[in-house]
Structures are given as C-alpha cells and as structure tokens.
Image (tube, rainbow, N blue to C red; front, top):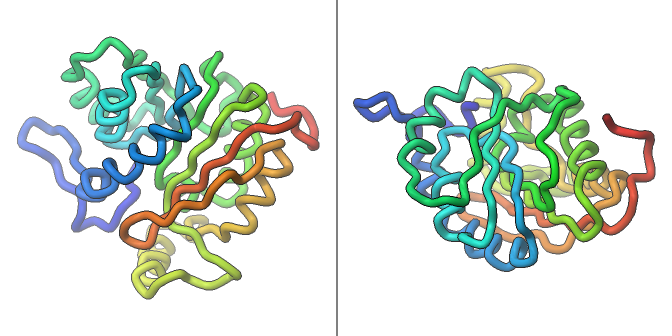
Length: 218
C-alpha cells in the first residue's frame, strides 16, 4: 500500500516497486527487532508493501520464518522482491485484509510498518484487537510509523505529512500514541518500549501478557 510521500517512491524498469523510506529505515528497525523478536519463531508482517522490508528482515533474522501479507492489488509488486529472495525462511505471500476473518495461523510475533495512518482509525483498532487476540501469551507486536503525543504533532514534517494524508482520504491520519497503547492494552498487550526512529517515526513494541479483555475477535 502507498505509505510515503510520492517523491520518495518509484518503480524500477522491471516494474519492481521501490520506497526510499524503506531503504532508510530498514537497518534501524532490524536492530530493534533482533532483540525484540529474539525468542520468536514465526512473524506475520501486516501490509508488506513493496517487499523491501520482508526480504531484508528475513535475511537479517535467519532464525525467523517471515510471513509476508498484503491485499491482492499489491501482490504483483511484492513478488518482484520475494521471488528473488534466496533464503529458505520466507513463507509464501498471502492475501490479508484487516477485516477478513481468515488470518495466517501459528505466528508468535507481528510486524507492521506505516499502516495505522493509511487505514481508518476503526480499521487500525481492529488490526490491534485481532493481533492481540491471535498472538499467544508472550507474543510480540512491533508497530512502526509516525505518532502524535498529547494530541500534538512531534514535528513540522509530520504535520505536513498529515495534510498530504488527508488529501488522499479523510479517513487517513497520524494516530495518537496514547490511543494506540490503550487499544493494545484492551487487547491484552503491554507496551514494552517506545523507540525513537529516523525521520520522526517511532517503533512501538508490545508484548502479549494476558487474554483480551473485550469480546471474542474472529
């Protein structure tokens, strides 16, 4: 899915999608995932986008089976990257819409980058609730992207990014970190760490500590 300002994205001549933001943030993200996902075995990536993160993280975190997923309209571009991956720890790409009832099974960690501000807040809440419902106890959830704090933008660039998001759809927008954490807590996940990342982004790392307090999520 489109996640960055348009001048950051391009297509290679072979049609392979490329995000400069992914190239810039992949090393800082994996440095944190290496520790956060150390005990994990299978990671579901929600919204694999171009596929750059999937192939880099799978290559750097060889102890993990990496499960890429996204909506069908993004699969063609994703496959350009995934088909070139030579490792054995990449699982076949699957279709996943947050509102679907059918999710991959048996994962003990979830990673998602730059999705919560693209989907509606209702969808973001549903994503977090389903992650919490489907993770096993002690499972990990890492959510990357820009967040507001105390209802305020953390930088002028994020305020400009918000304006660009709203041009693409009124449902889009940078989410309040406090609201995301509260939603995660309702889903039985506790914030372990809130990491400062490049370009005024954050990486929120949660751990599943108890069963969800709300109703059943199918």
